[in-house]
Length: 499
Image (cartoon, rainbow, N blue to C red; front, side, top):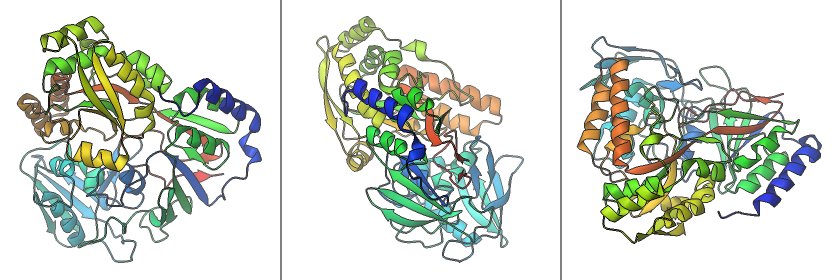
């Protein structure tokens, strides 16, 4: 494993600091400002047209809002719509708009909602991500009923639509908005105050907000990609919250500090080892299955995540109702891995390039994965890539052999139903099961179909699913109100307070 400094030395130094230095000796930020540490900075403020979870993380629910929103508990609640009602046949939803203003002072109208959602339905538009368009594929039309009601009509039942409306695709933009990459004119409890590129984004309270006012005046999203630096920033009092303990081995040490508290919640963040199904040798299912047999997930989680993580066996986290433990389908077995490679025509293995973005879980697992695959004859060349390059070349153009990233979106099995997504996985059986799950007339039927889909996915092995990341955060003892679980794309900050 590549380390920024020898682990034993790092753990020893940080443990000593945690136990003896004390955060109380360092001047904290003013009570009207909360500073939160994150690892990835957005490349743009365009929440609808630019990929990357870092964008909705800072903007969704804080700056931009949709008609409905997802709470930390996973419950869907009203937002810009005061009420929302599904028709008996499941083919339409009616939303009643509440009185609200954009940050520039103009009122939200049905025209803004129509403009925002019709962008999603425009298949020829490049302004909206394809994954979002897919989420709204069942939408037949969006119309206004009177001055304050919106009706979304569907061509078929879609049980996933309410969730999609709570995420980035469902945000309401001001009609005819431009310069979305640099100007965020939302309706949320916070406005974007400043963006110090390479360092931080500062949000300031929107005192004209339609709902309960945010509890803290300013919230700083501080971006620190290096794990050691983020831990040191927490220790030195620069941060009030560290959203992800990027060196999970240090969690126990953080717990021993009387000035800090550690919260371990759940996430939907599946660490995916992607294999390009569209090019050899990964266009052969036996090769993909061989890769899965070659990696000892329990040892990997212990090595790269300090034991804080969960095996899954497919692309479903344990928090979803359709989760099944499928880890037994492809257990760690080097003999089976070699046999599969031999049957696929690779008795001596092959060479492969592994693109690794600068994210802690990717960097901390890269050498373990390379060493594991070498045992069965797969020679891995690790190629570090920047985040913008990963978004463009890997995600955008599928120009890669293998890569790794955490897919954080909830209920996102639909990405494997997109043949042109960067996995290049094209299964008619899987696509059919996923589509039918969205049209199911009962929750029970939906769960059964998604369980079948997850099993098909596991057998086809278009990727390997290494582990689900635990939502491990550290905060100062006097800080409360931050989200404990990660149930969607947003990191909602309106309830955070110090004191």
